[in-house]
Length: 142
Image 1 (spheres, rainbow, N blue to C red):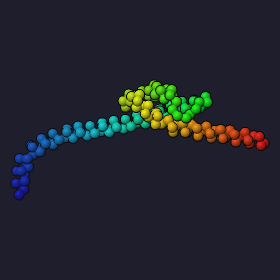
Image 2: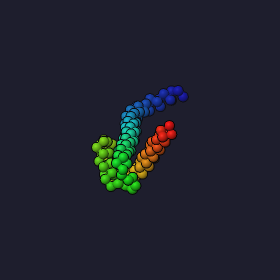
Image 3: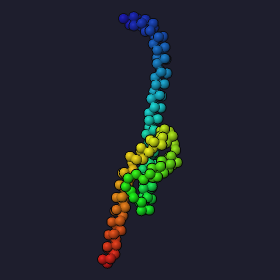
Image 4: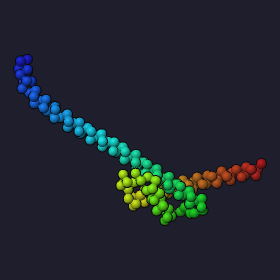
């Protein structure tokens, strides 16, 4: 039986080695492609987070400036959205271009984020005003 298996192995070995020699490069190429794809997905995710942080910071700065000037925070101030788009494109051009963001896509993201930022600014201003009022009351009481 051993002699038979040796004869079979001798007959099959060249084809088996050719098969393995052809399979290894294919597997290596496939694995490399999967790694590159995973890295691209991770990089795109980081760029998207960066873009959303830029939008958030830009809106906070613009809305806070508007509130400090006594502007109303109801609704969507027309110039604010266009200013935000320009600032985001200027401050984070890599994320905008790599992710293929158009002005309309940025406008949609900004409009979606704006009510939360407006609410945060109003809440912060209210708590600051409350703290200042409490400090005045405390000084008068002394």
